[in-house]
Length: 210
Image 1: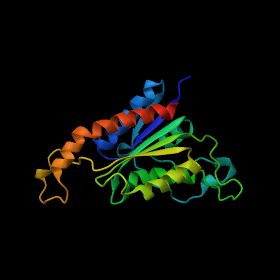
Image 2: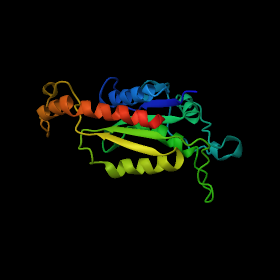
Image 3: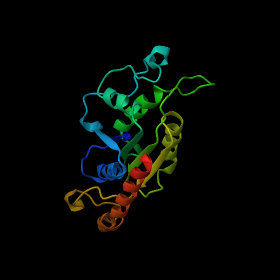
């Protein structure tokens, strides 16, 4: 029976850096027989982060967020999955607000506040967090490692992958102010380094299934 992988794009743009690396990871997973279902957070019905209703702290609903909205289908799918791929661009030093909303709901439903059994997740799954960024690869490593540690504890063993100094626009000259970095270097990086990162994402998606 093939493994089921959930892939989530927490960025707004299809076909750009984040979405491209997610798709490469998906191809890697599919190359070893996985079935992949992909979601775009920016195209879902209305949703919020955790509303602190504490419904998931009742035995009847443990491990299940009971708030019904656009994220419910994704949370249900992840609960039944064998692996998770989630990607987000870096916005102002963190991942997107859409990522945070899913993150809150995904993690809090498994948090018990019990010292003996702090997590009630009955289906830990391997996860891959992909971040794209205008900054260098290691600029936000502590922030990403914090997400990794939380995922390790409440979702499953998690790997992080960063693509930094990405090309944000096809033509930087169309903006109305000078950029503090060399746009030509970004074009060159996109042509030389990003293809290598695409291959790396493919392998990480492949390894997620193995």
